[in-house]
Image (tube, rainbow, N blue to C red; front, side, top):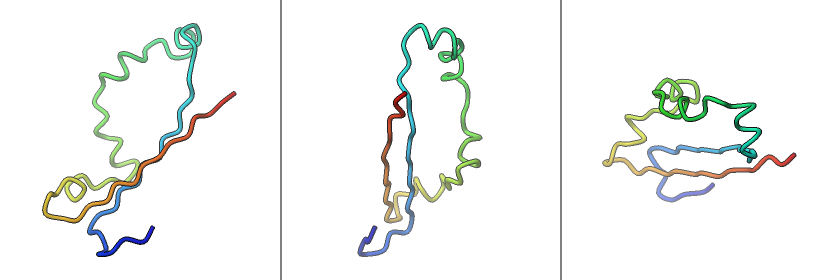
Length: 72
């Protein structure tokens, strides 16, 4: 990616996802709703997102995002 002027912060997000039938959700991920309500703030450390810079409105920020469905 070539951006001019050069951004102060570049954040890249790529999501892999797989659709599930209602039966498979109940079988494989019965606590999905409860998991969705949990605090996931710890995840930023795992993926290396610097939220202070990513959310700083005085900086030139770029967010690149994409995704792919896993079929099968």
